[in-house]
Image 1 (spheres, rainbow, N blue to C red):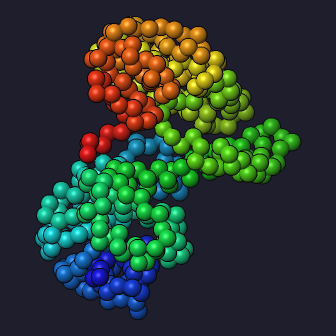
Image 2 (tube, helix red, strand yellow; image 1 turned 180 degrees about the horizontal axis):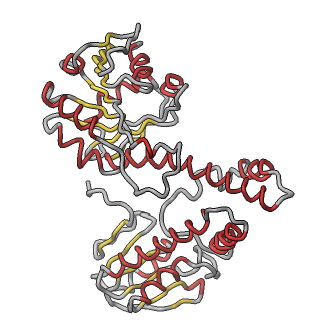
Image 3 (spheres, one colour; image 1 turned 120 degrees about the horizontal axis):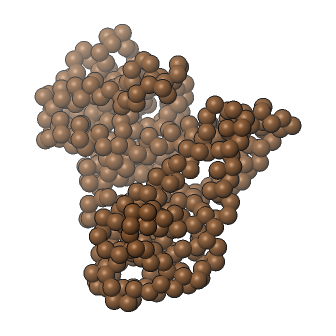
Length: 393
């Protein structure tokens, strides 16, 4: 396999050297001082593109220098990465090798590959393949990845078949995560920011320890780190309705208050509650857009309970009623028996197990919004997997 590698910086050079151990690699960088004893570095971009089976692009997508995190920036206007270099490189590849298979490693935000990058190579194939690599251990992380995201236009493997065969040789045990451009872009950026969230969270505990006293932060975080049933596990990584119950919302509200009283200077927990409420409001607006009465199936804070403390369904209902909508609630376990005999309604399927109970009661023109994307379907209804905006296969 013949590989071209554009961009030989801190990420690109070590990765190209690893690939050169198994493949014919030619590299290019605008910095003419780049050198390697593992593969050839050519003087023109065209030489690293023509006749290559895959062309990897690992060029910078920088922020302005004021946004690198080394100085305060939260007071500044938000801004995206600068994609100028990446666009210029893809445009140049299109001139030299219009049908090239290009693999973009550079970090971009969700939506950028489809809107800004792929159209620059209309006759070729553009694949998004970001890496999870730490500076200082680039080669080690490349050969032992937690996962390898691969994004194509339609989320299928056809365009990426050559790339997949490369990884099957280089890292045969790697977990390949194939998806659309947007899915691969999101895996990359939310993976990184999940780490930032975890660090910010545990450092909040540190600040509380300093302010309250009689606390060793490592005792607290050590106990949390060993909690592998819910915290350090796949639990709660299924998007859908927000959390509820007699603990979670009220605990965040109380911690928001302690952040104020201790004068921490920030309020992570208040931000969590603002997000929760904004997400419920947006779901309510989506239900309103269906232009029919709303039935919420599932009112208790979780299925098969009687408790409605902190119920997310009731929060969504609040926003609907605040907008003047009539809301019907159905959850026999919690004492809600509202029925819509034969009427067309927009159903929020908050508890999926209630689907079998309601499907014979509602009108044939009803819309079922499934926030858990559980795969419910009925030929007589239109079902919407809330959160899945992929085009149907």
